[in-house]
Length: 557
Image 1 (cartoon, rainbow, N blue to C red):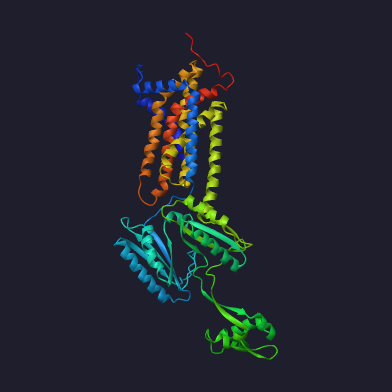
Image 2: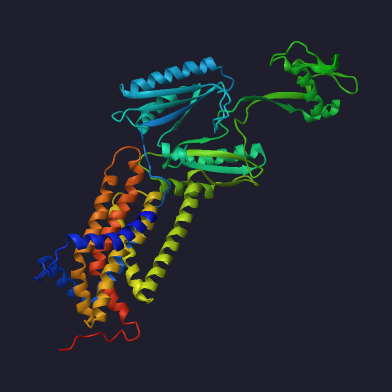
């Protein structure tokens, strides 16, 4: 945009005058009566200038209400999308063989085919532990009991949300598996690194037991919120573990500690290295192995204590089945756990975030644990913070340019008033839709800050030239509105017509392009009306504060 604008400036200053000499009529056109629409506009502007303070006050109230409405929409990183591509992660019982997982996936593929009514385009199923590949970065742990099904549906078929609503109750009845739906994620979100569930809460601490308990507390709180569904934790689907619980009184009485017990069990299960065999220049360990005991035989394993007593493992310890951690995340040298959730149908992103914030305020986490947003919400906060700084910097630069051009600090304020007037049009377009303001809409607002002032600059430059030539301020403002009406309308119409295809485009990318186009169209349309009707009144009000501004120039005789 910067390069194209600089090129258009060069064309306007060098090429257009040369072409005008060729194609414009050589004879001076006779002065004709102004068109009817121009006379009506001038009459309307003159009537508004009779009560400039009332007009400016009404515009300020409308701009304030529009800003309040836009703030009430909330913000989001990317517009919500429900493309015809979704994925389903399947987690079976820990220890399940890959053949069993493959049979479960085949059954789910059959259910997907029945629910699609023949509109499936492609189904990709990744079953079991995938081979390591240096060309790919995997973001999830794969085991023999896990699988991921990626589905692509024709445009005429059901959406991912409709598939989830239809099949989720069926899959929930299958006790042998756990199904996690991932819908509403697009290729763009994957490219930006924000794919996956839109709600991600990170719990950090040191103790795995406390992390599991804290994650379960947050999960229980989020599951009660109607704005969320499919709430999961990173501990779910972990491998089975057989934990040893030492009977302290009995073990202390027999002189058995946990380290001795662990060596005994390790030797029973994996054997013990007793010596090394040297063959040439190589040393190979010699391991003595007994018959591997079964789970039921572990408590009958007999060992000898330091005092020479023979003790069975079951006399000093018991075995407890537990679910281990599937993945242990770390951030800044602290262990972390993830609690994820999707947004329920009919709810928007800001309301879901508000529900999560309320839950985190109510949940009492164990000491030493901290919970904070990650994923899309963390990226949204960072991105909008940068965009706000960019918007402020853009306004400062525009003000500096205008102040240097007008050689005044009051009249640039009049020009910049076209931006809040443009917010009235933005609110008129976005508030009825009820969609949160995304990154692209925010970019549209920054672009609008540079585009909306163009009409105001045209109008006020002409008015100042007329005032300098001796015309009364009111007459100059009225005449400037009529003189600049056609170029102002041409500028606005060309911008609006260029952006219309982006509004009515189709496909996954249209969800991203349309908010920016709608924002600019609504803003520039309303800023055009504001420049013609409101800014002359604002100029008249602010010009009174200029030294000598109370005495306007008047043509005598």
